Picture 1 (tube, one colour):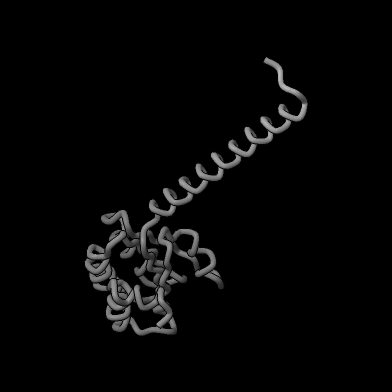
Picture 2: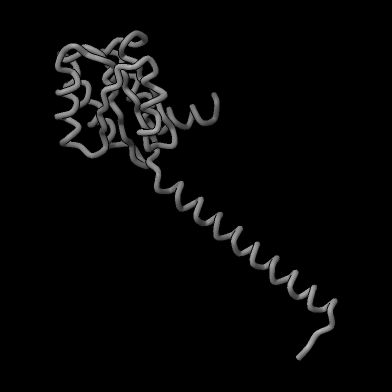
Length: 156
């Protein structure tokens, strides 16, 4: 069966258009599926020289993270501690797969640690100069509650 030149061009054009629509739908499915694989929230903690508080802080954070819908992970960044902060955090992280610990004594630890976070939303808790250690748990609790996250997303 042979078609005229005009009919052949029209059929090939429709076939190419159908293929492009199929690829577009497939890409949309892949993108949605990939977003579902990400955890909901990541906590990025910047710490330095808090060996007396790091274990209690991490245990309280782990308890909070268990109750978060959609999952939660944490990355603890040691910014050049001169005490045992890094070793204690690393020991606790070995017990929990949702926690990562890295030592970055450089000048831009947030930029270097941000790719280690798996969540679609990242909360940075700077315990070096911006926030006292005792305020970290109430702040994290407020950020990880569902109504707190809804408020952040809506911009209220």
